[in-house]
Length: 526
Image 1: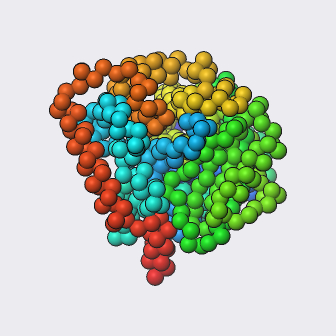
Image 2 (image 1 turned 120 degrees about the vertical axis):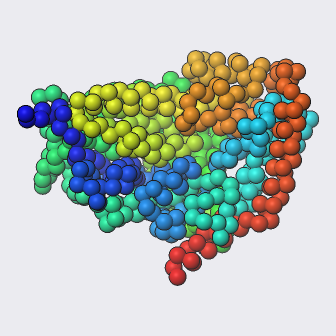
Image 3 (image 1 turned 180 degrees about the vertical axis):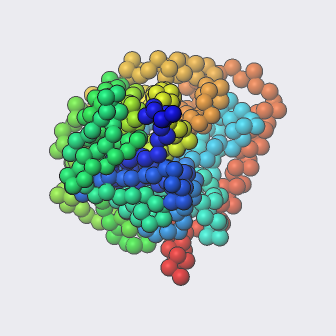
C-alpha cells in the first residue's frame, strides 16, 4: 500500500536565514543527526546575500560551551576566530539609585552553599555584615574575579572546562562566519545564497518549497531564522506577536564599536550594564575592541538624546578610543514574542520568534534551546507535527513569560525616580501577576527552589537571588528566622567562609582575561 504524505518521513530540513541564529540552528541539527554520514536527514540553509547580519548578540550563556563542543568546534579555534573573551556574568551599575555609584553582580556560578544550606535566609539575617559587602561577593568568587578582570580558568585547564562558570563575549559577525564555514565544510549542510521571493504551500497550508530568484528549494520542515523580518512565520503565516511593551518599554538601541587606546588594557570579565536617565548602556569587552550600546525607549527619549548619552558614556571610558557619531548604528525592535512560533511545518528560531530587549543576553541562549528542542523532538512524520508544535509552543511561551518577569524584576526593584522613564519602569502595576505574587511573598520569606518548578529554567532561583538581594538590603525584608535550624544556618556560614578562602586562592592562581586569551591564541598558532 502506498504511504500517505501524512505518514511520509520528514527528511529535508530547510533553514531560511543565516546569521548566528540560522547557522547555529543548522549546526545543532546537522551535528546531532550526523547528516554528513546519514542519508535519512538533510539540512539546507538559504541565506540572502542582500541581508546584513544584525550583529548585536555578543554575549552568551555558559550553555554555549557545551553547544560548541557538541557541534565539533574547538574552543581555541572559536576564541581565535571570533575575537572572543570570557564572560562570567553581568555587572549592574547605578541600577539601584542615582545617589552614588552602586554596583551588584549577577554571576554565572551558583551561590556557595546553595543546595546544602539556607543561603537567602542566612544573608537576610546578617544585616550588620551585609552593609560591608554584596550578596554576590559573599556567596560567589566571581564578583572578586571580575573586580580584577580575572579569567575563569588557568592555561592548563582543559578546553570548555572551568574553574569558575563562564560563557563568552564574541564578535557576532565573526561567529556567524565561523559557524557557516564549519557547517558547510564539516557538518554536511547544503548552502544556497539566494533571495527568497515567495513561499509555496500545499492544500493543507504546509510549506512545500521556497521560491528564490534563481531556484526553488524544496523541504519537509522549514525553520524561520530571518530575524525581525520573520519572512515565513510572520509574513506568510501571520502568527501574531504578543506585545510586552505594556511593562517593558525599551524598543531602540544605538550601538558602536570602540577600540582600545592600549592593546594590553584589561578586558572586563563581565558584561557591564550601566543605568542612565532613560535606559541603560551595555559595555562588552573583546580582545581588540569593545561593543557599546545605549538601550532606550522612543516613548521617553529621542534618538539624539540617546546618542548624546552614549557619547557621554564613551567619553568617560578613559582607555577607549574616540569614535565618530557617524559610526553609531540605530537598532529598533518591538518587544514581544510569538506564542505560536511553530505553525504547520514552520518553526521560528531567533528574533523571528521573539525579542524582548538586550538585558541579560537571552537571545543566543534561546536559539540554543529552540534548536535543541527541535533536534530532540524532530517529527518522525507529518501526522505528529501538530503534537510536536503544540509542545514547542507551550514550552517556549513559558520561557518567554519567565524572561519578561526576570527582566522586569531588574526595573521594579530600582529606587530611581529621576525621569518619566524610570517612574514607568519601576511601576509594579504593569508587571505580571506572577512577579507581583513572588515579590509579595519574598517580603516575608526567602526565595526558594520550590518557586521554580521546571528543571531547565533559564533564570532559576539563584538568578533571582542575585538580583533581588543585590538590589535590596536585608533590613528591607521582614523574615521570621526562627524556622531555620542552627544546622542549616551553620552550613551556610561554613560555605561563606570556604568561599572567602576560595576567592583568595582564585585571585592568586588565575590569569587575567587578556593573559589567558593571549596564551590560547599563541598555542593555537603553533
